[in-house]
Image (cartoon, rainbow, N blue to C red; front, side, top):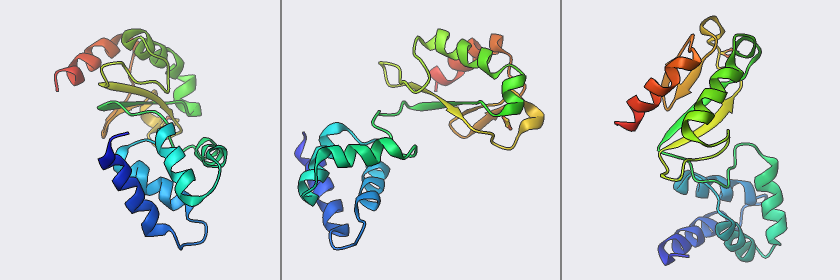
Length: 155
Ligand code: FES
């Protein structure tokens, strides 16, 4: 691993070292810095704290706000809440998956797009709803998906 990453991880661990229950704040701080928690980083944290890598991995897997995958430049969130689901969110999700050749939870190999599923974002009147980064798209028909992807590809 690049030494600057290692240095940064050690600095973060040091900042929380004497705090009881420091594992979660440490993982949070590292994810904030790098966007995800690779297995290498998890192993470094484990070794610094004198705990097993399995324990660190158990915490990372348990909490949904931790991720082990690098996120793409553009994060697509297809709302799978009830209102969106009954109005065709599954078809919208499938259109994104087919267009980008990845499944939900994955990132394209060029690191441009990540597809995720979200809970209700409180815009049910616009169902089905998709977010891309900070933008919200309502009443999104699957046939608009290629045009949307093209728009973000150009950015
Ligand atoms: S269910 Fe999708 S915005 Fe509420």
